[in-house]
Amino acid sequence: MRQAPVYLSVVVPVYNEAENIEALHGRLVAELAKLCVSYELILVDDGSVDDTFPRLRRLYEADPHLRVIRFRRNFGQTAALCAGFDYARGEVVVTLDADLQNDPADIGILLQQIEKGYDVASGWRVRRQDPFLTRRLPSMLANRLISWATGIRLHDYGCSLKAYRQEVVKGIRLYGEMHRFIPAIAAGMGISIVEVPVHHAPRRYGRSKYGLSRTLKVLLDLLVVRFLVGYSTRPIHVLGPFGLGSLLLGFLLGLRLVYEKLVEGHNIGDRPLLLLAVLLVLVGVQLLTMGLIAELLTRTYHESQDKPIYAVRQRLDREQGDEPLAEPALASRRAP
Image (tube, rainbow, N blue to C red; front, side):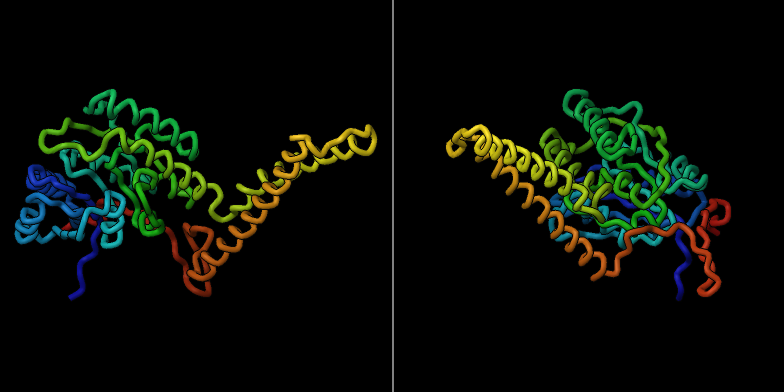
């Protein structure tokens, strides 16, 4: 039989949350029932080593809306979200944490913003209930740095409670620890983003999986995201200016040394400036060569996978039929 269309997919990465999982499921079911929409719950067990999966199995047997994905080992939150996105069937995909710090009651607020026409509704933990020095302060600094580097101004990149149109999450690929950068990466597709204040509760059971050790990973991933957002289809624009600058500076220094040798009669063989000029020219040539190779790799990547360098929002074509953007409306997708 053909399955009924699903409007909402709720994706939750889970890792060693045995004490929270049943309460989380109960609150999600209660809040989603109030929305009166067709939905599915996708809980991704990211290699838990406690009693999480047996409890998920019991919940699965009792709830027809629940789908469970179990990893062979712990791959990380980014991988868990990717798996949830791949299996999600809903027109709107909502993500949140399994530690009960995100409030499932806020899902309806995010959906209202999606219905207004936004592609991404991102939660903002205005009154975050976490330690200041180890969690909130590093997060504040990271949010400002990410906003400056990506050009997408958000107060709370780290909030997992977000809502996406399906075409947003289906059109991106994530690696490493890049789940927190989804709005910035998706912004390259020309999407619209709104930030919504949401509730945040202190963790009652279990322990946080994050700490200060994650800071270095965020900084490294930020470099990758900055490149992907601005230069993924034109890498020569990153390496080219440095290569040309180095080449030009080395050439000018070389001209200066030639002038001193031929006109002023100075000995330049033992001058450190000569070594610097030669080094700058070589570095400039290498950077330009790397940029050209990167251009070839970029073209190979896009052409071999038939991957476009653009994202279409709407198509009007008499030959192949119009494909207008579907604006989801909550009232038109009420569950029977």
